[in-house]
Image (cartoon, rainbow, N blue to C red; front, side, top):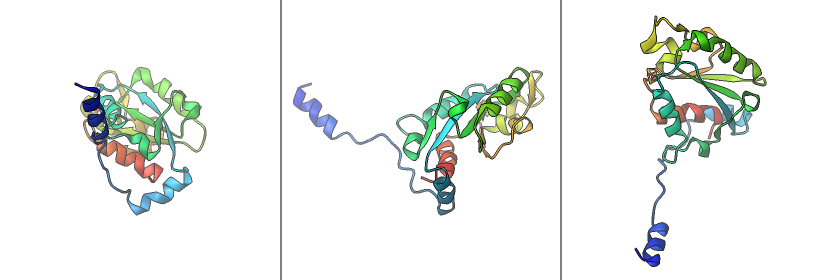
Length: 162
Ligand code: SF4
């Protein structure tokens, strides 16, 4: 391929990003109170990793949650909201609570996937202690097994208002 052809293809390649439209009017007020920016700490409390794949996709180039003001951060001390996946296993009760306690107030919790909401496929499993809402207060949940990246982005936009 010639340099001219490469430049031509670079200049004429359209973005891969999906157009997800405008946010509903009622969420804009919530977003204004956060300044349109939402810092998120993720905790996998016992997921099968299906939900993680969809979160990764939600922050990838196609759905690109960052363009709506949502960012994943490395420390709960920098986070406005906690996103939690999976049922809460017995070993993860302590780490989940510690992560929540380390976040500055006001703080929110978003449960991602059916397992986080009500233990889903893993209900009554020998290693399962309960749903996310049994251990930390949940403000929003995103149902699905796993939820579609578009649903995850929509829930985040509901908080950033963008
Ligand atoms: S909701 Fe489905 S994809 Fe997500 S952790 Fe549970 S079983 Fe896995």
